[in-house]
Every structure is written in C-alpha cells, then in structure tokens.
Length: 173
Image (cartoon, rainbow, N blue to C red; front, side, top):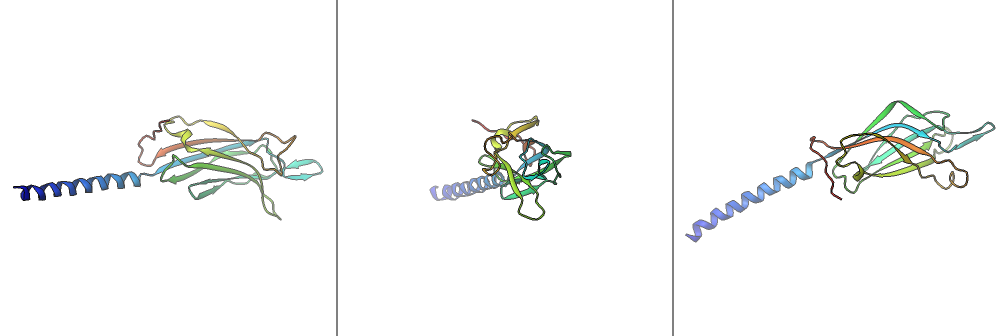
C-alpha cells in the first residue's frame, strides 16, 4: 500500500510544483507601465550668455530601467512650456527599487549640450495612487550653473504607475 501511495503523492507534488512554477512565471512576467507627462520647466539657468542676458534652449531626457526618452527642444526660453504636453511611456519589470531620472539640457549647435538641472524621482511615490496630478519637482543644478544667485529651477510633471494587466499597484510602507 505504501508503494501505491508513493506514486500518487509524488504526482501530487509534481502537480503542485508545476502550479507553483506557473504562478511564479506569471508574477515574473507581470510588467508595469510608467507614464510621464511633461508640462513645463520654471526658472531654468541660463546656459548661453549674450549681451542681453542669458538664455537656454531646453529639452528633457527621461531615463528609467535602461530606456531613455527625449522631449522636443524649446528655443530661447528659461520658462519653457510644452504645448500640448509631451507624453512618454516606459515598461518595467519591477518598480519598487526604480527611479525615474529627468535631466534638463541646453541644446548647443556647435558644442556638447549643457546639463542645466536634474531630478531623481522614486517610483514608490506613485504606487496605489489612482489620481494623477501635476507636481513640481525641484531640479538639482550642476556645479557649473549652481552657486550664489542661481535660480531655483523646477520641472512640472504628471507621473502614473500602473500594472500592464490593469491590476492595482500596491505598496506597503
């Protein structure tokens, strides 16, 4: 009787293992969509100085999970507004330890583009957040444009985090 029971129990164990393996694969395959909407920047540093003061030709580069997206460039503006707002999407396998990096650059035709501000935004801020609103993110200025008298620059974004299958994204602190 033990020998008859053993094959049955090992087949049950094999079925359980297969079932658990499928669940783990489903969890591993679950992807998340991060949507970023770019509205405007405020009080950017002037990277190009001329007789009349300064200006910048800003654009924003977003990086997340090894992918990058780049906005259009707005010429001669320290307070650019993207109208209509520009929308970018990223797919990530996990979000708990991921950060959206936003870098604002000044476009230069004849030389390398200048970094004029950046922000690092943890995705954990957006788990469970059903209502997506525009927020202001302070930009950290690089040493070349920072210092006394440097403006306090801000980036205005709307960010959402959703599971690609539509299920809620929960985070417990």
